[in-house]
Image (cartoon, rainbow, N blue to C red):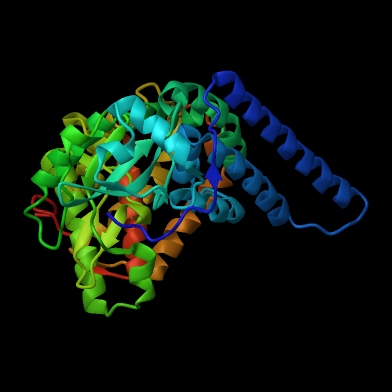
Amino acid sequence: MHIKSRTVSEHKKIPVGKVKRAGKFARTGLKVGGNYIKHYAKKAVGIEVEREELDKENAEQIFETLGELKGSALKMAQMLSMEKDMLPSAYTEVFSMSQNKAPAMSGPLVAQSFRKYMGKSPHQFFDTFEKESVHAASIGQVHKATKDGKGLAVKIQYPGIAESIYSDIRMVKPFALNILGMREKDLKPFFEEVEERLGEEIDYIHELDKSVELSEACAHLPGMKFAQYYKDWSSERVLTMDWIEGMSWQDFLAMDPPQELRDKVGQCLWDFFNYQVHELRMTHADPHPGNILLQADGTLTILDFGCVKEIPNDFYQAFFDLLDPAVMNNDAELEKRLIALEMYYADDSPKDRALFEPVFKKAIALLTEPFEKGEFDFGDQEFFDRAYAFVWEMKSRLDIIRNGKPRGSRHVVFVNRTYLGLFKLLQDLKAKVKTRFDGFGE
């Protein structure tokens, strides 16, 4: 495992108590409120100020607090940073730092956390252990080590994260709702899924088991290379795996690789995620650039199997039936699937159906377009322009926003996140990919 970006600063102490963490949020809320007052006071006296300036100042102050708190608070920023079609651009830019620039734990705090769960200090446990982390993210940070001749990546969870996860989510909600301009009930499935996935993600034994399960199941896929995981050198808060040298996503793209290599990497990504979904009924649901390593020949390593979504069979069937023209062209059959996916309710009025039917059909058509053609050029900016235009249109549709019912099964959240994240990676690559999967479109 190898990630080139270094951490930008160290935190000697992470607030671990609920009261201390709540106090941090409260002080940040006051700062944000003060920014709004200053912004509108300037406008009131005729000073020209841009809303982008206000958003950037708020985003930086929120991110600074989330970086200190880490855990689910910082994870929410990371997840929101992927929603480029939902967030104001200032928030996207600042929150994207959560993927690879979170402030790191100090050396003494690392040793204290490691000793608590492994019984020894990292320097006693490993043959060598680098004090400075090579990667600090939302839940834990990674250090390079060696043991028995093996080069290792050791992920150590930040102290207090497991105990504060649910209270943090409750405190982050108001910020997320305000930034997105949405009501809590509309994001209820999102928060429910986040809580469940984060509850799994803080358990490194669960992550180790899923890492082994998925990497072994996908080992036959061409162009993939997986780390080995070491159960005897891990615990519920420490995870040890092979160190794999490689380029970051950003460094690979900076090489300006030829189209043939872009297509090869794109095909590997497409096959990796779709094999999991369609054959294993689960997916690595965190497809962002920080979880990818590449070799010069395009060989791909996927990291961080902490966020794995298991897909119920009934949901899977209803969701992927939407790829079938026989379903999409039959209103009665389409209605059954949309009810199963909780997009429609059995007690919807005719007015509700008339409101949502064209919206859902357009959204489904956009999401399924890459599947239908058998081969798709993700360098086609026109496709993404249409998708982003649709999202922005929906954000301005008050009749949709104020309808009064949340729309969509909680299972949609991470399956959509998987595919939207995958689409974004393929867009970055400008890759042409064979998208037909056995059983679809036959």
